[in-house]
Image 1: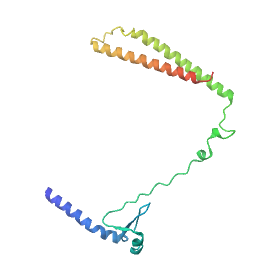
Image 2: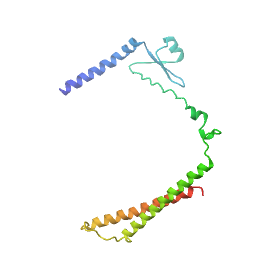
Image 3: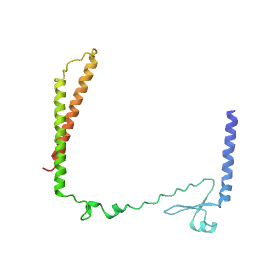
Image 4: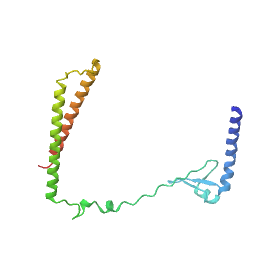
Length: 173
């Protein structure tokens, strides 16, 4: 059965290869490949024109043409410049900006206090790497895992505190 299928497949391939030039001729003639900086594939040339231009015929190979997408026009706002670059637009009142900065500072300082309180609680529970064992930690590995998680939590909270302090330092005084 497999041999019969493979023979049929080979016969089909041979038949389509033999019919390809006939199909090209039926669809519009011979396709030429013309040399040049942009290589040109065309079926719109006569045999004399193709000879003059040094074109070769292509037989049995289908040609796929892919259209390049048309470039999109730039949005009007990007073409005219951003709102902040145009005079009179995009400006913020200095008093309003000071208010925003003070609000941002107040929010960041409150967050800093919360993170520092959280760090103090984590360090108190961590007890210098020897927290009290809980009843559900009969297995010593469970205890060690909890200690490692506590240590990672402390490092993460310290990193958060450093990031908040950097953000506060960026704000104008």
